[in-house]
Image (cartoon, rainbow over all chains, first blue to last red):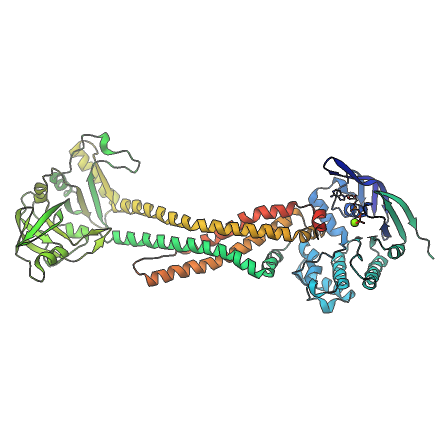
Length: 227
Length: 399
Ligand SMILES: Nc1ncnc2c1ncn2[C@@H]1O[C@H](COP(=O)(O)OP(=O)(O)OP(=O)(O)O)[C@@H](O)[C@H]1O
Ligand SMILES: [Mg+2]
């Protein structure tokens, strides 16, 4: 599904060079569940942005579904991102003036899907996350947990094979946080490849495969033995 | 993205910020309103002046001495310009389509009756003058059709001159002195009012031959040829030229058909309309700057949203279009309001000040709306390009 080889990402700030990713190799199979942990500044977000095609590596190759992502144009990357990647952010990133329904619908709208085709999809997504009664509400009228559920519905409405979540529970209390993780895991059970960046040891331990990063390098990559 | 969704998304931000969208659109509305109103006034004046002008007969060709061209080459090149004479006028009578020929000269002289005297415009005129000026005698008759060189000393008064000299008295058959010579009044013209600052009623008409002698002139100022309305003006003009060139040796005169005059006048008036329209355009530019400002603010406020759109797979092009679309919708809404302001204002102006004619052609209305959209497009480009060029990661971090 995902194959990174010899990935480096170097930021140049003035004269200084920040080695945010240092020779990263990573293979992720379809349907895997990974948690990425590590101290602040270790390059977790940088790695996720790269996987999400929002960023390009300074060097190294990235294959997503056997497509060499580094050879693609900006527009091709946008299309690939639209069809293959779902993002969940710490700060939800819902558009405040749109209703929950419209926020979830947005990727379909941008992709030019017919309204008649969009409606049942969005309704099904909202229904499965228990958000149907909130469909007409705007983000400011929703709780944090509800907002993140709307964001997850939006991230998965295009049926992407990969879901990237950068600290999805960072802004939530532990109850709604674990609720959100439950949802993500349920999606993983149904086949989505899930990568979650988290600072929460307990949440990170729930993943079958755990990656630990320090200073831009993967220092630990353990497969949890079923217990 | 589908067209309707595109418009809906572009409009959503405008609706979300009602107050500031309203104020921004107001700037465009005032600009478009000013353009529509001012061009309406310009166009109204255009129509009004042309209408005034065509009150005079339309099947007339005027011949003036000297060469004046629209390209500024003056007649001075031919420094042997010969005056147009009464003989020239006679020669033109032989053209079959010609109904009448009048030679004109104009000057000022003192007209006296009893103890009253008045300095007025004196027209040397002929029997066809009423047709040329589209002006009839109110009482009595106009100058008879006779050889201008031996014409009798008859005078026809303008209505105002009659009022000044005779009051309510009947002037017909009375004698007046014009420039010291004695004339008998045989008619009084109907009132024509003012035109372009000229009082057409404070005048007196006397035979051209006598006026030439009075002003000690060799040639007339203008020969007016009245031709059959069915005839082709260019054809008649060509015959006039041929005859006069034969008599003068070369073209040292200018033949102007009514069509030429209207064209020249129309051109001048078009420039006038354009100039006042451009004046209104200044406020439109100010409105455009308002849109530019609000769109820059909007892009800054919505960086997170822009980053999100990119993360959801929107291309740079889509982000660019969305923000330009927003500016265009904003400007078009303002433009539509401006049209109502402008057309309504023009109507109100026309209704309250009847002397100020207004006219709003549909094409101007459409052009003004298009102009508003173009202003929005122009003002939207810079902020939209900023939005499209944002780094999505940076944009997403901006929370
Ligand atoms: N745009 C950038 N310009 C310069 N340096 C950057 C940029 N983005 C990230 N970095 C640097 O790269 C390194 C890795 O950053 P990254 O955001 O990936 O860390 P992180 O592991 O996600 O940390 P956190 O847990 O605090 O979110 C940091 O040292 C950071 O300062
Ligand atoms: Mg991070």
